[in-house]
Structures are given as C-alpha cells and as structure tokens.
Amino acid sequence: MRWMLVLLAVFGVLTLTWAVPMPKDHEGFFDPTILKIEEEKYLGKQVANVEFPDEHGRTHKLLDYTKGHPTALILGYYTCDSACPLIIKNAIEASKNISKDFRGIVLSFDKEDTLRDLQEFKKKLGISPSSRWTFGFMKEEDIKKLSQSLGYRFFYSRQDRVFVHPNVVIFIDPEGKVSRYLYGISPREMDFRITLAEAETFRITKNTIVDIAFMVRYRYDPNEGKYGLDPVVLFAIAGFT
Image (cartoon, rainbow, N blue to C red; front, side, top):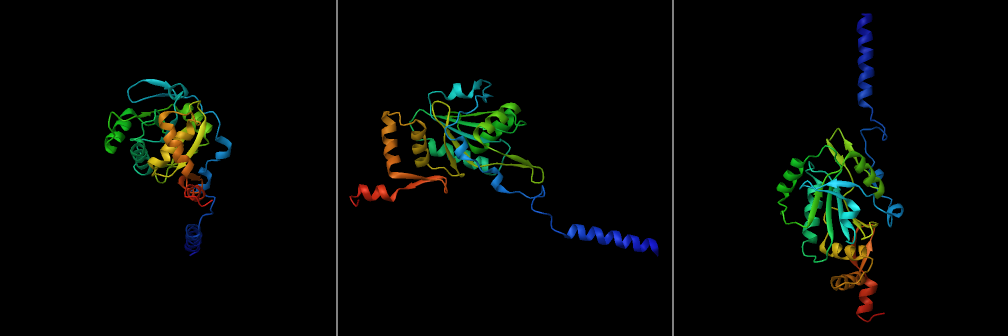
C-alpha cells in the first residue's frame, strides 16, 4: 500500500510538471527581437573582407570582388525551403532589368552547405546560368566575421530543423561600406533602383541620373523596409507648395 501511495505521488508531480507552461525565457521559446539589426551601428561601416568560393570553384575576396560596384548581398542557406528561395528569386527578378553595373551576391551562412546543395537550390528556383548573381560559400570563421560586421544574427532551431534569420537584402557601396538594409521577401525593382543609386553615393552616370529621379519622388520608410511615394515631393511637382 505504501508503494502504491509513493507511485501515485510521483505520478502527480510529473503530471503537474508537464501541465505547467514553460517560462518565456525557456530555450523552446523564441523572441524575434533578438534578430533585429541595429542599423545605426552598422550603416556606413566597413564590411568584413571575407573569402568565398563560388559555384565554379573560383575563390574571391568579398571587397575585391565588389570594389567599384554597388552591391546587393543576401545571406541564406541552400537547404532552406521557406523564406530563402522567395527572397532570392524575387531579388533576381527585381534586378533583372537594371542595366546598372552592380554586383548581386548570395552567400550561405550554413557551414554544412555543399556545392550539390547550391546546384539543387538553383535548379529548383530555375535560376539561369547567365544570371548576374553570384552564389558562394564561406568557412565558419568567415561566416562569423561577415555576419558580425553586418550586425546579422541567426541561429539554428533544432526543434524545427531550420535556421531562423532576418529576411533582408544588404546593400554595400563601391567602397565596401553598408549603405542600406532592405527588409522583406519581396523586394521590388523600384526598391533596387533607388537603393543601388544610394549605394553609388550619387556618382552620376547615364543610368544613375534616372535612378536619382526615382529617389527624389520616393521616401524610404524604415518601418516598412521599402520605398513609398513622398507626398510632399508629389505636391511640389504638382505645384501645390
């Protein structure tokens, strides 16, 4: 009888343990604010000059590769089947009609990604071999250096078996400094044109003159992570101010 009472007591304790909700700071919960990029700390800062091999086996130094060119950089991983394919596909689509001489780069932050993963990723997305975007990998130490220089944080959720990370296109100026973070999985051509023009630091070229015209009419909204029409400028153009 005594053993029966002990067993019942143990069962009751276990039942209560399972029934009580875990605290918010338990590792099973996730606070998305920890992934927020503190832009004020990183805008205008130099990007880490990491090495990355591309899909063709060529090794590049990031800042040597982007020197003299405005650059759009996306960090992701090639076994992702959710946000990464969307933002990359949409970024390529948004930039395909831009004649500006820019660099588009996708780098994996998963040290376990392989060339086969990259090839399968591009195949699933139907990315043409003639795409202007370069895809590559990084070693673990370079992943750490680059992500820290960008204020970009991510972690692996063992429960969900996915990486949790910001969905953002990071724009870099021709001198290798961060010029803009463009958030969301659906960047638009207008956003690319304006942000690449910003990244060029207003160096006037034939194409940039048109792009700066876009900048005059549009205003960046950090809450939305995109550009919208600037009503003040529109009224000015219309002669209402």
